[in-house]
Image (cartoon, rainbow over the protein chains, first blue to last red):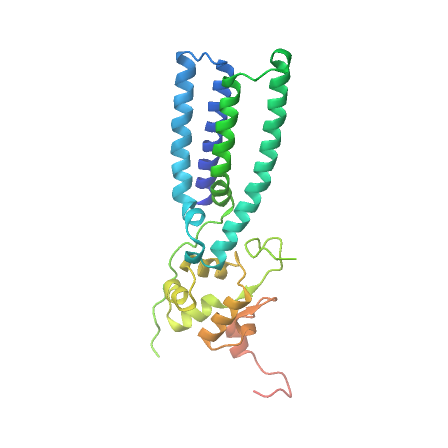
Length: 154
Length: 95
């Protein structure tokens, strides 16, 4: 898979997450037929895109360290470093959003389940898939061929 | 400060002769990768300059080719081998 194809897959995956979470939030615990259709469609798109991302870059993330060479270990370490920074920002934003929702709720009482569910699921999905997405987004296109040469006569 | 070898755009460019040396010996990337214990794609990334080798990998490549490291890697672009082989000697220079 080329880097541009992987980037399309990563974008599709996270747009799917966003659409799913937003639709669920807007449904406010009472999703109708259209809401379910959007949620299911967004879920299918996200899963398909995640599968494509996995095919393009999954080997680096799950493999044991002793199976990777120095370059692959460096790529994976860098992906986890970048993912950690992004997840920190996302969790801070989620905490601020939760505070806002809690203020909106009656007398600072508990936030509605349907408001928290997409936040929680989104946070888990993002945490689990971000290192993979970083690798898929940043890795250059693989070398074009095996680079075979015919041995010249000596 | 640790250098991120996977981001050559922010680091010093390192030139190499890996492709030429492979061609001289009729080796595929898989052959060379097997010889120095890396993934064959890493050889491709090395050749393109998308990845800089660690000191250990540079030494393994040096040992495999039987050449000093500076004959394989350089901070300056290598001159074409044809120019080096067929360059006319300047007056007073040994041929």
